[in-house]
Image (tube, rainbow, N blue to C red; front, side, top):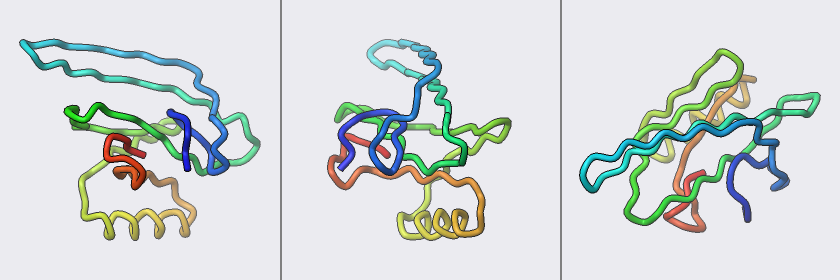
Length: 111
C-alpha cells in the first residue's frame, strides 16, 4: 500500500523532488491547473517508480506526460488490460514506459 504522494520507489521510498511549478487559469467556476514536478533519481541505476496523485472527487485529469532527459511520453487513453500488456512488454524489452491508472485503493487517486 502506498501511503505518500508524489514519485515513490517500489519500496515506497520517496524519489527526491527537485522543483515544482504550478499554473492556474480560472474561467467562471472552472479552474484549470497545470503542475510540473521535477524529480531526480540519485541512484546509480534506473529505477521503477510509482507516481501517486490524489484528486478531489469532482476533478478530472485531462492530460498527463512524463519526461526523462529529452524524451517526453504523453499518456493516451486505452482499455485497461491492453495498456497493462503494452506497459509490461515495454519494460521487458528494456524500454522506458509509463502506466497511469486509477488506484485500486481509491477512485480519487491516480498512480
